[in-house]
Image (cartoon, rainbow, N blue to C red; front, side, top):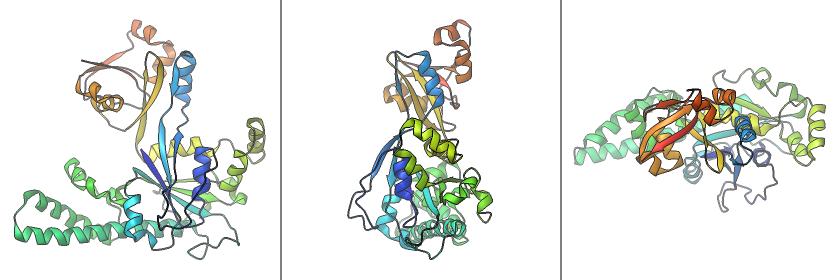
Length: 357
């Protein structure tokens, strides 16, 4: 899965990029002209449950979930509507809008002043506008095509887009519009930005660290329904350069209970409706990431397409139950394993053994 970091220039996107990857990144781009490849890093997702499982099987390799993070170049107001920027951004599975909350007179804000709530609203409007432009263009083409030849599927698509257009004109996000599974499938190819899950990530000023865990108290104008997380890029980048022992002391000095990466990944999982399930194999213990409400047969396909095709059943035990027994064999002897079919909806923390032909 690919997560795109984007936002106005000078917001601290690359600082967050480095904090998440825990390494300095050589950045080539200075503008959004895409003359250089967008920097990408592969991040391991911290997982305390996998750590506990690994402690029970120290001889097995521990394999964490990995997510790809893209660091998009900073943009100026209105620039997101350029086709090249959009075509790249639409490829991401989830969006993280990095919002500037810190003051730095030497680094002017592209929109003139520091106002996170205004930046969030402005960027949301730009995402909606980009989708409206796409819908309008597609409707014009469909109308011309349907005059030449009748097409049932094209007619359904036109009908759906005609429902969405007034919503976009009113400034509403497509993801807030109730869609049937068939309608969602119909829209999938458009990769609408206002359909994508998005996390607002505010880069706080050092003096505002007290609001790190509740940034909406600092910025009450932000819509209560908007998912928001805060970090302080300046301090966290300083922490990166310290040894482990010094990091703990430094964080304690600033009252930081937890670094940004684990907080970020928990929140982005929540925003994107992602969950983990686990497998215990001969040589490795592994975490897997899937969408909520994924049936067992599709979860099996995340491991290998052959397991999905030959799916027979899934042996399942919740994480807490497994920890209580301490091993797969003991859980099996106690009758704690459940047999589930292909339509079983995998739950967060399930430990699963897939049987297949």
